[in-house]
Length: 631
Image (cartoon, rainbow, N blue to C red; front, side, top):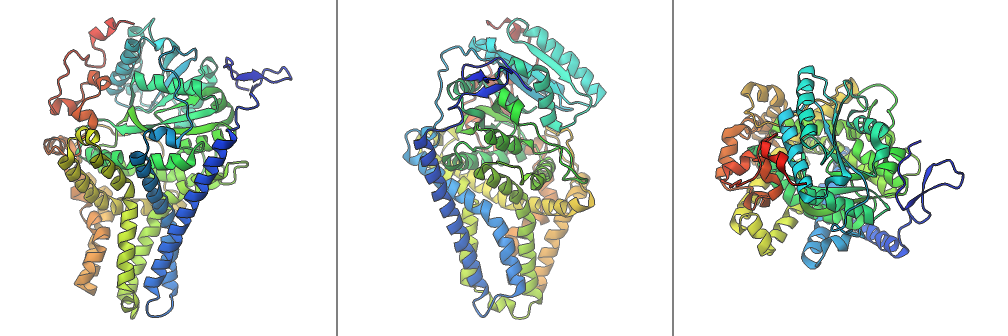
């Protein structure tokens, strides 16, 4: 049984066994808050279900314009239904998020009952900072952790923190560099911020097992744990704010920050993270409005309450054989639902703060990450029967599965429709073009609604417009990113569909090291990885021109991206593409227009390329003058 120093809101049970038990009111939300959340969920569910019913009806009208619905059209309707939950939920999240952003003076207070805590007071809690790494670039990780340590020490509030570097590295050469680098880091901050390094030569349980090993060894010494990935960066201000909020909200078991992209010289990452920056704020605000205490956990840039996490969030090893068995790859959402089942809240802070991550630097690495998430999310099929889950938690697991089921469903929908046009006698004539075109416009608007919502909010706010570089720049960046997203979506969908099709035959991706440097992808590598997409696009163009050239236009959103996948992957990778993207002044982030002070010690190449003056900022992983920071 896990035991810890007892916070003020935890007491031993009456049996005297020393088992930590929550005080009676710990897990019970105030009746008014619970009733308000129930009303919001009912309204949101009604809007989502009504949207799905309306869109399905419109598709049925398009199919039955000149008679009944055929079996092939029923198949298309079924595939369409599988894609709708994420589309409808994303749309209404964006609508709610935009309303909150524009109409509320305090968006966070509108969507959440979290008390802010007092960041001016020293916390009596002990917080572990967990940097989870596996075969990473040691210098980059050390530089990032060094800068975070310096920021904490400068704040004068580092006394309650301990930094743990939790390595799952299995390459001996890298492990040797880790030992030297982190021993030097520990010596550097001795007396001001304890630094501990631990390596597992094997990694059972993957990242969740890495953290479980920490809990077994050192968890009892800490109240909270801030979880970082190797590419995470958080300022002292953000970490102190999270600790203060956890102190002030004893019912919260997991508190997730809204993560934003780090300034980068990668053209691919710049475009992608600009779109994420626009989409995530409205989407997360809207989801927080109705999810409330059943919020998301993304596995990093979050703070955990250690005792209940250790007690209740131990992941099972899934039975059976094959890729969907064994250790859970996508551990985060399972841990969130287990924490909620235990009675603790899982909350998200849907506001942008100094909580950063690096995004995949090229298309191939992005697709590889998507496939790992796909395999992990599909493992949730074996977890849907977990007892006593909250209804919203169970819905979240279903949605996580549908996230990757929707890709093959969407492609099946398109291929079946194209086959009806080519081989189904009279089918093209029977399709109601007016209803079909209206459906296309509505669905596309709903898909891109989160990015549209935040874009409108930025345009309406002079301060935000300036933060993103001005109205013209943000508009051009938004349009370019939408085009890029439309090209990328079918490329990823083909990859996911082929991966899902291979799962019954043992296809798996595992937990390997991630590539984070901005290297130019070799043309041969792009071709070897993306030839299925190219073949799909080429077949689509050939099919359209063979049947009727007019068919090219409705198929273009599906076939153009895959057809261009190989050159697009190569052209958006590498330093040359990155320099051109920076010189274009597109996809500019607020942290580039006005650099965050906490990032300056990293001397990021993106900042250097943009002419940012580092002044007296400390640079390098082990810059000597950092040792003289006044603690």
